[in-house]
Length: 221
Image (cartoon, rainbow, N blue to C red):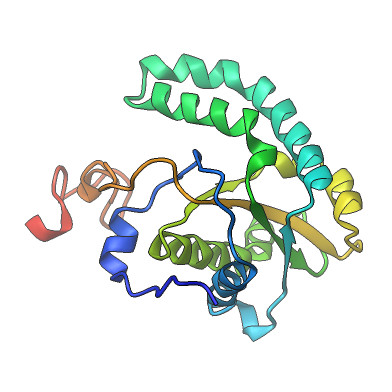
């Protein structure tokens, strides 16, 4: 069993969590990956139907094919992301990390692909959101558990852009849809406090734009 004890406080896990893309070449035990997924399955889900499936990807050939899909989408998106560097502080650093991740994608020791089992609904939009209402909380549990275990984890969707091809690569039946991919590894850097604008800047009371807490953090109210 892994040496990770998951005793990190929830406060620390939440406030230091971020997308960690750069990794070392250290391996990850199967037991640890299964523990992360087990925590994922503890997330709330609609009617306790547990309509999730998780694929752990370790095969080098399969990772290479997912890396090709990821690279294709990043080439399309990269120009727009570069333009944002003048608008958003820290975007250049994020883009550099993305470049590294795309180049080394097949080197991640393991990936978890979270899938939704059941019929896909394309309309109305509220039902589209409902399709992911169980997968997203499970993925967040996995990300928090990875942080508590001091692993590098990053949630990605670009490697799954071609649903039909991804389903074929993974041998998924038609009623199982790949939704989210989480890369895993041991971090090459260090975690630290995440930098966010005051919560009052993104919260309205009753109606959009009414911001009585503008510029304030929760502990300042």
